[in-house]
Image 1: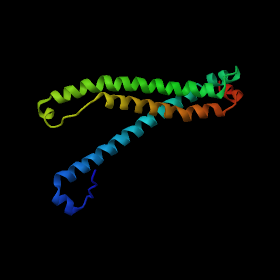
Image 2: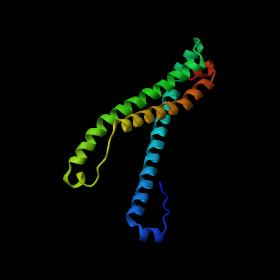
Image 3: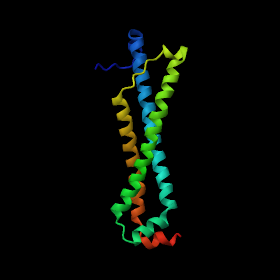
Length: 153
Protein backbone atom coordinates (compact mmCIF):
# COMPACT_ATOMS: atom_id res chain seq x y z
CA UNK A 1 0.00 0.00 0.00
CA UNK A 2 1.39 3.36 -1.01
CA UNK A 3 1.16 6.26 1.42
CA UNK A 4 0.07 9.57 -0.07
CA UNK A 5 0.89 12.76 1.76
CA UNK A 6 -1.93 15.29 1.64
CA UNK A 7 -0.39 18.37 0.11
CA UNK A 8 -1.85 20.95 -2.22
CA UNK A 9 0.26 19.59 -5.09
CA UNK A 10 -0.94 16.02 -4.49
CA UNK A 11 -4.51 17.26 -4.22
CA UNK A 12 -4.19 18.89 -7.66
CA UNK A 13 -2.39 15.89 -9.16
CA UNK A 14 -4.61 13.13 -7.65
CA UNK A 15 -7.88 14.75 -6.52
CA UNK A 16 -9.94 11.55 -6.32
CA UNK A 17 -7.25 9.62 -4.45
CA UNK A 18 -6.80 12.51 -2.01
CA UNK A 19 -10.53 12.68 -1.36
CA UNK A 20 -10.69 8.94 -0.79
CA UNK A 21 -7.73 9.16 1.60
CA UNK A 22 -9.41 11.96 3.56
CA UNK A 23 -12.72 10.10 3.69
CA UNK A 24 -10.92 6.95 4.88
CA UNK A 25 -9.29 8.93 7.68
CA UNK A 26 -12.65 10.47 8.62
CA UNK A 27 -14.32 7.04 8.70
CA UNK A 28 -11.51 5.63 10.85
CA UNK A 29 -11.82 8.54 13.31
CA UNK A 30 -15.61 8.20 13.45
CA UNK A 31 -15.24 4.46 14.11
CA UNK A 32 -12.70 5.10 16.86
CA UNK A 33 -15.04 7.64 18.45
CA UNK A 34 -17.90 5.12 18.35
CA UNK A 35 -15.72 2.50 20.03
CA UNK A 36 -14.67 4.91 22.77
CA UNK A 37 -18.30 5.89 23.32
CA UNK A 38 -19.31 2.23 23.57
CA UNK A 39 -16.53 1.57 26.09
CA UNK A 40 -17.51 4.57 28.22
CA UNK A 41 -21.18 3.54 28.10
CA UNK A 42 -20.41 0.03 29.34
CA UNK A 43 -18.02 1.39 31.97
CA UNK A 44 -20.56 3.93 33.23
CA UNK A 45 -23.41 1.42 33.32
CA UNK A 46 -21.38 -1.11 35.28
CA UNK A 47 -20.00 1.54 37.65
CA UNK A 48 -23.57 2.63 38.45
CA UNK A 49 -24.63 -1.00 38.83
CA UNK A 50 -21.77 -1.69 41.24
CA UNK A 51 -22.40 1.47 43.27
CA UNK A 52 -26.11 0.65 43.60
CA UNK A 53 -25.35 -2.92 44.61
CA UNK A 54 -22.58 -2.29 47.13
CA UNK A 55 -24.56 -3.90 49.99
CA UNK A 56 -25.18 -6.99 47.85
CA UNK A 57 -21.50 -7.21 46.93
CA UNK A 58 -20.60 -6.74 50.60
CA UNK A 59 -22.94 -9.55 51.59
CA UNK A 60 -21.43 -11.83 48.95
CA UNK A 61 -17.95 -11.01 50.27
CA UNK A 62 -19.08 -11.54 53.86
CA UNK A 63 -20.44 -15.02 53.13
CA UNK A 64 -17.17 -16.04 51.54
CA UNK A 65 -17.16 -15.08 47.88
CA UNK A 66 -13.62 -14.46 46.72
CA UNK A 67 -12.57 -11.28 44.93
CA UNK A 68 -12.05 -13.35 41.79
CA UNK A 69 -15.62 -14.58 41.90
CA UNK A 70 -17.02 -11.05 42.32
CA UNK A 71 -14.83 -9.77 39.48
CA UNK A 72 -15.98 -12.64 37.28
CA UNK A 73 -19.62 -11.90 38.04
CA UNK A 74 -19.31 -8.22 37.09
CA UNK A 75 -17.21 -8.86 33.97
CA UNK A 76 -19.77 -11.46 32.87
CA UNK A 77 -22.48 -8.82 33.29
CA UNK A 78 -20.48 -6.59 30.95
CA UNK A 79 -20.16 -9.46 28.47
CA UNK A 80 -23.89 -10.13 28.67
CA UNK A 81 -24.67 -6.48 28.05
CA UNK A 82 -22.21 -6.36 25.13
CA UNK A 83 -23.57 -9.55 23.58
CA UNK A 84 -27.11 -8.17 23.75
CA UNK A 85 -25.86 -5.00 22.06
CA UNK A 86 -24.06 -7.02 19.39
CA UNK A 87 -27.14 -9.13 18.65
CA UNK A 88 -29.34 -6.03 18.46
CA UNK A 89 -26.77 -4.16 16.39
CA UNK A 90 -26.43 -6.92 13.82
CA UNK A 91 -30.13 -7.78 13.94
CA UNK A 92 -31.24 -4.21 13.32
CA UNK A 93 -28.22 -3.01 11.35
CA UNK A 94 -28.41 -5.47 8.46
CA UNK A 95 -32.10 -4.89 7.65
CA UNK A 96 -31.53 -1.15 8.11
CA UNK A 97 -28.66 -1.24 5.64
CA UNK A 98 -30.82 -3.15 3.16
CA UNK A 99 -33.56 -0.53 3.48
CA UNK A 100 -31.05 2.27 2.94
CA UNK A 101 -29.61 0.52 -0.10
CA UNK A 102 -33.12 0.05 -1.52
CA UNK A 103 -33.54 3.83 -1.64
CA UNK A 104 -33.16 4.90 -5.28
CA UNK A 105 -30.90 7.88 -4.61
CA UNK A 106 -28.58 6.12 -2.17
CA UNK A 107 -28.53 2.58 -3.59
CA UNK A 108 -26.26 3.40 -6.51
CA UNK A 109 -24.05 5.81 -4.56
CA UNK A 110 -22.43 3.31 -2.20
CA UNK A 111 -21.99 -0.44 -2.34
CA UNK A 112 -21.29 -1.77 1.18
CA UNK A 113 -19.97 -5.30 1.42
CA UNK A 114 -21.06 -7.04 4.60
CA UNK A 115 -19.35 -10.39 4.99
CA UNK A 116 -19.65 -13.03 7.69
CA UNK A 117 -16.08 -12.17 8.74
CA UNK A 118 -17.04 -8.50 9.21
CA UNK A 119 -20.00 -9.50 11.38
CA UNK A 120 -17.81 -11.85 13.45
CA UNK A 121 -15.21 -9.11 13.92
CA UNK A 122 -17.89 -6.64 15.04
CA UNK A 123 -19.34 -9.11 17.55
CA UNK A 124 -15.90 -10.02 18.92
CA UNK A 125 -15.02 -6.33 19.24
CA UNK A 126 -18.28 -5.68 21.12
CA UNK A 127 -17.52 -8.55 23.51
CA UNK A 128 -13.99 -7.28 24.12
CA UNK A 129 -15.34 -3.80 24.86
CA UNK A 130 -17.92 -5.30 27.24
CA UNK A 131 -15.30 -7.31 29.09
CA UNK A 132 -12.84 -4.42 29.34
CA UNK A 133 -15.62 -2.08 30.44
CA UNK A 134 -16.38 -4.41 33.34
CA UNK A 135 -12.82 -4.81 34.63
CA UNK A 136 -12.50 -1.46 36.44
CA UNK A 137 -15.92 -1.52 38.15
CA UNK A 138 -15.26 -5.11 39.22
CA UNK A 139 -11.82 -4.28 40.57
CA UNK A 140 -13.25 -1.26 42.38
CA UNK A 141 -15.98 -3.39 43.95
CA UNK A 142 -13.43 -5.78 45.42
CA UNK A 143 -11.24 -3.07 46.98
CA UNK A 144 -13.67 -2.29 49.80
CA UNK A 145 -14.03 -4.44 52.89
CA UNK A 146 -17.30 -6.35 53.36
CA UNK A 147 -18.22 -4.39 56.50
CA UNK A 148 -17.74 -1.05 54.71
CA UNK A 149 -19.93 -2.29 51.88
CA UNK A 150 -22.64 -3.48 54.25
CA UNK A 151 -22.54 -0.22 56.19
CA UNK A 152 -24.00 1.59 53.14
CA UNK A 153 -27.25 -0.37 53.59
